View 1 (cartoon, rainbow over the protein chains, first blue to last red):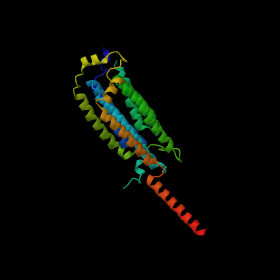
View 2: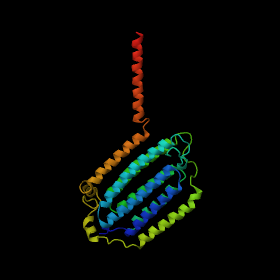
View 3: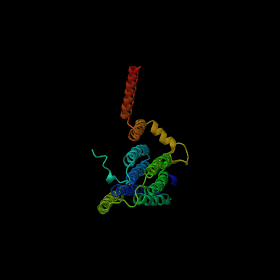
View 4: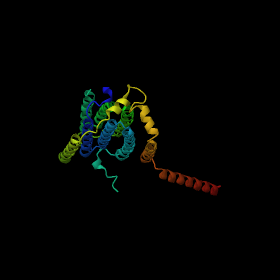
Length: 106
Length: 202
């Protein structure tokens, strides 16, 4: 019977999701290494996923699961393209720092 | 029972902080890996079995390995990437202030809001024994929803992945199709010119 109930109230899950999201925001703002910035973006994606899954469980509606699945797909596509851009941009340079990039100016 | 939430939650927050603060990108990848594993446990506690597996396979198995490949590729040159801290001292103060305020506002809103009434009766009806085929969040349940109600989003997923693949090929190919075509045309023209010259000699 207890298997059907959540271990903690729903708002704990959502609060954890908010904490994780803002750690990701801080990473994007503070770090200048493009790889770490991308990983911070992945953190934000996963925070959103956690909120989706928590609310899906609360309402017993698996639309949230489908949307989390979509988010994972978009995150995979984003990681592939962003890493390709990183490789193309920084292959020749010695420092990997987004502030050093001049090649993308219009 | 609540340890099922709090132990992964502590791991999630600690590894997220480590991801952001690590001095080398490889450490960030390792931290992110433990973050995703703990998140998969949280998904299981929310009875999203299929998504927990997807989290482990797609995120840890594919995306993080992609990150590792890029780190290895970039650091195979002269200097290993990102030696030393790359934080910007001017930005850290205002940024952490802004992030702390935003987080405070969101947390206050979350904790002050009333959680939606959980449909316990429906939950009990749906939960059933663990591993039963049609339980909420199981593969059968998820797949039925994905291929009937949400078929169009699923098709759009395929389109997104195809666009990503084509984009990566265009970005990282050695030469663009345009350059390749032009080089081929020049070579053909040169061969024709040489053939004409040979005709003239004989």
